[in-house]
Amino acid sequence: MQVVSKDTATEVWTALRSMHVGANHVKEAKVQTLRWQLENLCMGEEESVDDFSSKITLLVGEMQALGEKVEEKYVIKKLLRAVSDKFVNIATTIEFFGSMNTMTKEEVIGSLKT
Image (tube, rainbow, N blue to C red; front, side, top):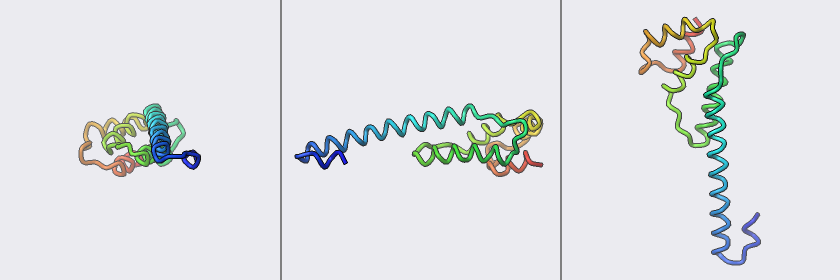
């Protein structure tokens, strides 16, 4: 460990602070990468609703584990926006006639599967 070789408390503190700042930069970069992956994720034509929603859930979970706040409403909108062509009509119906403010992600997934 880098702090073992330090002679004074000040040197140890400086080394720890530098490591922490570096860790924050790595964390921020990872969150940015995950956000980009989530934004660019689209459902494949042969992909199931369950498989696609699992990918979204995994990315969101990783972001939340890094301290990023991700609103469920955002996840629902992403899910409806990125479905394949065979689900577009259902997604549009959910957007226009479903209550986006009260629906849960699970309800949207269930509606897409019916």
